[in-house]
Amino acid sequence: MASLTLTFPPGTVASISKSQGDWIVDSVNTTEVVIVVEDLNNDGTISNDEWDAAISGDGNDIGDGGYLYQGQGTSGFLYSTDGTTTFTVGQNVTDIRTAMSNHFEADVSAIVCFAKGTRIATPTGPQRIETLSEGNKVLTADGDSCTIRWIGRREVSMFEMLHAPKLRPVRIRAGALGNHLPECDLLVSRQHRILIRSKIAERMFGTKEVLIPAIKLVGCTGIEVEDQPRALEYFHILLDDHEILLANGAPAESLFTGPEALKSLSPEALDEIETLFPAVLERIATQGPAALVPSNTKIKRMIERHIKNDKELIGG
Image (cartoon, rainbow, N blue to C red; front, top):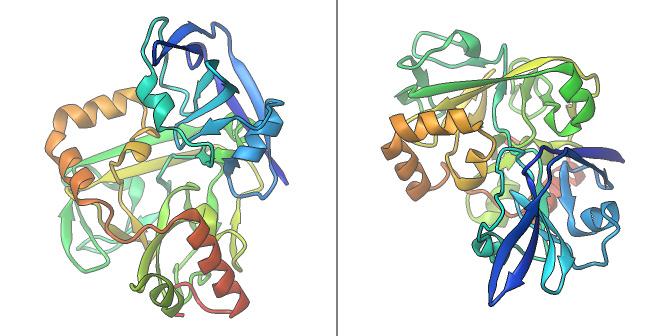
């Protein structure tokens, strides 16, 4: 069992109440709020029961990918889990509040990227991700050549790794996916999705190819969360479309600009993308992901079947 430490900077926790059908912010936190949640099933997300236990709630606590809530009736507290969304007194948060569900797995590790040193396939051969730039070409799993529109990077210190375990990468050891992939150890953030190709996926979803967050693969032989905190640099790659890249030979997604993925970006990075590439954001959001993304419940069943039947995740 692991612990997830949630740190909410000033302005990211709001006291809210319902008035004439609308939820309005009454006040916001002026000091840092830290909540430790026991991740009972070690899946890197917070379930309703886990959140309820952490804040000594009474079972009426709700959340989604970007927000958590505690309270009941016509008042409570709204938390922004990405640490960048700030609330203001008097703000109408009805849309946020009504979109939340009482049955949830709050994703507190939305950052989606490759670790420094990852070798990305390009038309001239694999290149370390930190050597790539906007305008360079990369190869997709289908063999197409695509232009990099934007590369983002984020440095995570050892201190952050120690105090926010959700930032620790998932290590996929050489060959762990099957079909001799990846060719060497691959480190990605927890929510970075890997393309799985298997007969089990085909039987369950009607398609052999599905995108699965790396954290959901933990438990398969050779796939685990790094347990030794260290400083690390993460990189995003944005293309014209959501694509499947080859990272250390393994199929993994480029940056998907859906609402939850965008919450992992800094306000400065998001502003840059929205200013320079508004058409890219709109196209990717409209087209959706490059492959099917199953629900968490179905992902769990699929992985259990792979483990039980000792089937490879790629080619099994």
